[in-house]
Every structure is written in structure tokens, then in C-alpha cells.
Amino acid sequence: DVRLMRAADLPAVAAYDARLFGVDRAHILGALLTGHPASCAIAKRDGRVTGYALSRPGARAWHLGPLAADDPQIATALVTAALAAATPLAAGEVAAGADGQQAAGAASRAAADTARPSELVMDVVMPNAAAVQLAQTLGLTLVRPFIRMTRGAAPPAVDAERLYTSAGPELG
Image (tube, rainbow, N blue to C red):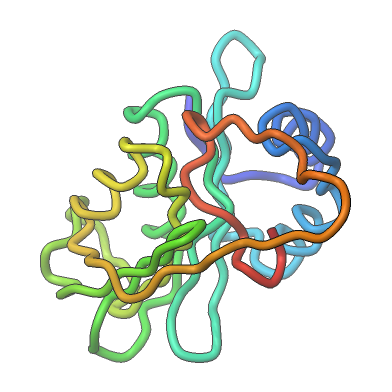
């Protein structure tokens, strides 16, 4: 069951996300959902969250992320739902980023037949091969890498198999 996310879904989505990301990001997820609720989707099975996708306009392109899902089929359905609701932008390149990588390619190669933004950015979690494949299916190609560095305690462990995109390098 994939549908647009509602504010009432936020506690369950935040709990799902915390198990994958290693920290509570409810405030970030809530702000993203509040900013553009019509372009955010949730997947549930038997009343349990199995994935979510948040998306929003950026300064130069539509941004898809964070995206988390239990499997690639759910991730694809979430992307389709979120982008179908996104406001189309001016024609141009498509960009995808990675928790370490960014990509760009022609929007005409987009996976779904639904209307979607002509410019798109995704910060892909590179250890997730399915996330990289999804970005490629959307017609995205690598633009630049990001290197995450920390001082002090090690960052929390993440579930890279279910995290597809981050909210962006500035948000996590």
C-alpha cells in the first residue's frame, strides 16, 4: 500500500527511520513533510511502515530524499508516487547525488510514465546497490562524490540496504 503521507504518519515514519539511520530525525522529517506534503509518500504492509519518500523543490532542481524502503520494489513505487505529485520544473538535466555521489542524465529516461520534474537531485547511499540501480533507471548519472568526515565519536551505524537517499549532505 503506497499513498501520500499525512502528518499522522510522522511518528511511525520517524520510528522506522531511526531504526535505519541510527538517530532520531523526526524534526527533519517533520519539517520536510510540512513543507511539501503533496510530494511525500509512505508504504505500509499490514499496518507497518515498509518505506517512505520525501521530496521538495530545491534552488535548481527537485530534491528526492530521504528515501528508505524494505526492498527495491517498494522504493520504486515510492519514487513513482512522490515524483508524480511533484511540480514539474523547467526542462534541463537530471541530477542524482549519493551519500557520497551525485549524478546527472536526461529526464526523458525517467522510469515511470507519470509527469515528473525535469530536473532532479538524489543523494544516493552508495553502499546500497539497489539505490544506485534505481538512480540509473531514472536516467541519473554520477556528478560528484561526497566524503563524510567526523571528529570524535564514530557516527551511528546505518542500514545501508534500506536507506536509498539521504535528505541531503546538509541535513543527513
